Length: 278
Length: 248
Ligand SMILES: Nc1ncnc2c1ncn2[C@@H]1O[C@H](COP(=O)(O)OP(=O)(O)OP(=O)(O)O)[C@@H](O)[C@H]1O
Ligand SMILES: [Mg+2]
Image (cartoon, rainbow over all chains, first blue to last red; front, side, top):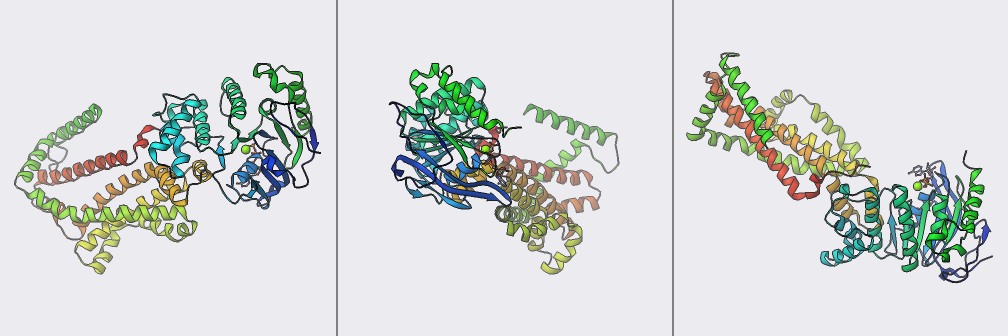
């Protein structure tokens, strides 16, 4: 069963037990598909036969207990790791390595400590061979967008954790990739900053026509920001359940956290994960 | 800056006092040594001596720096090279140089070549080993970042690995250069007395201790100046290095 889902119209919530087994005939709807991915590190089987689709223009969260292979999956999609078997397609093309259609936001920010904020933000463009004046103009725009105007000449060690992650985000946005891969991007910032980031992320998903793949540990965060949540189970990891939170999104960011549906989904996810957390 | 000046005053003051006590009849005061230094500078002895000493020193240090950094990068990047070459440099670092000098003289004579060899043996291992370990310890997350934004291997080397390794590479260079200075004097004392080594040997033989200490002092001064120059170069090449580091 497949449920169509589009932003701004009536939203259907569904739970699809298990993964989508067959190749999707409407793959144009999906920016990214992961098909029967397995990944072993020596004896450790991190992922096994994982199949998952990421609808275009939406935010999909990967949620699951620590060590279940979320980062591994994200890096396979990014082309940083090769799967042991299976394949990932981005816009119908099989991934063989990093590409201009994907940009990564790292959990530990991965900023160059010796480079100023503007060089860090422009670094993705620098690696793409763009001329300095051009890339710095673009970087300056994204620095403003993430609220760091005035810090262009600062160095990473002069910034707070939250500001550093904004730099990481601006760097990923600057290359204008269609797919943004975010590995627990908010886990190193404080709770207030995190909430602000979550709100910003919602408007980013609204305004930019990009596909977001978002790894998180937090059930609340996943339900708050996601169009689709994939729950992964511990090693060897598969998709246990796909949840599409919906209706409460239109009621405005301020009301989401009190919405009964929001609370129900949070509870439900906790119920299905509880047994795996001792 | 003032702190440096103060520590210099303290050291020289202690030297002066020790010379006046005197600690040993062969230990001149600071002022006597400086007078001797001025004399040697004005009659040109010092310049001819350094002309002699600096040649093997500069050649040796330059070879050690270039080959050392290149080898270090290579060893750091390739496990296979690490396996092949690391032991050589570790042995070289541990080798008792004085015992090797007769062998070098036998093979290469008493000329420039042997002296350059001595300097390279002193200076190169620390440069190679520091560079290699710095390269190996490049944070993998920033390498991965560059790869995810489609950096080529060459770009990752030039824009990630070398800048990240540069502080440790430069500290290896500083140690290497200091060792090179020691090697240069050692070569002049052990192979043939030329240049500054000659001043030291000769003035000792005629008990002109102020001149001897003046020569030693001048070589230390030169080494310090050279190391400062290296620091300038580092700041020029990698301006972010003095910015401190993100600690997480
Ligand atoms: N380079 C590696 N070598 C060997 N095993 C690895 C490697 N990277 C990950 N693993 C193993 O693969 C499993 C999945 O790791 P992964 O980092 O993908 O988990 P994760 O879901 O991102 O966890 P977390 O939520 O804690 O970040 C873990 O059990 C880990 O031990
Ligand atoms: Mg992870």
